[in-house]
Length: 295
Image 1: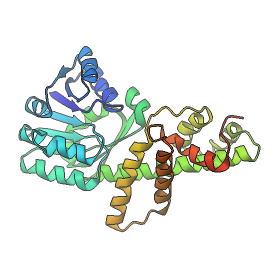
Image 2: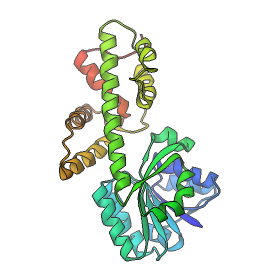
Image 3: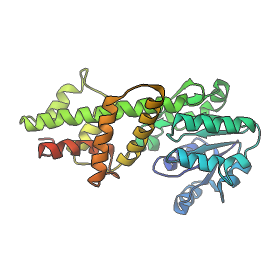
Image 4: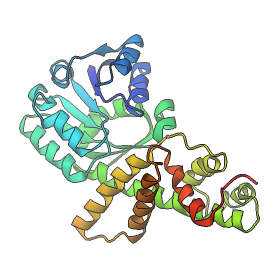
């Protein structure tokens, strides 16, 4: 089986490397030629275009920024839909709007091509070590067929339901993560202003009900002033745009999510959009006129 991989960015490059490590034959394509050469040095073949990948691969994985890019790569002129053969499949691991996933699924289905929407959670560190969490929507038999390929990049692969369900699950994930980082930031700023070590407060509460994977990932980053992006603010803004658009369409008011979205918009105005979403803490630091450090 030959696998195509389109999108060698902060997530796609390490994910594709893990497929090579797992022994899969890979063909890659990206506008960034240096990224393609890096994968070529590890044993991947390189393609000249999206259509070139479609014509030679049995399954194509896409890892792209948002719905418009995925629709263009799949349905646009010279897109995958023009080259994928009946019986082949697209696994879109981008985080996009569920309605966009369903649109692409329907178009490919008419051509006899299968599709899974399989967005991921875990950021760059888990993409590198192959321990991502993947939530998958599509036909169950297609999920079963390609489970091993997805598992080569992940620690957890869960089938959620029909087409679009994977991206609904990802939107839910992004709601919890965004609000959790905001809550951690509020707690640590309270500790700092009250004259108590944020680090000791973190150590005291992380083993109780307040503890979470998000807290363990982001609290140390905040206290160490490490805002190198594992998942950038501007990407989380993109996801929350999709969250709020979807929530409005189905009649699910999300007031806390909307508030965190405005916090992220304020951070973007302040020039932090390319930093890790742990920078949510900087919004609270600005309000409180202090910095969260370990002491």
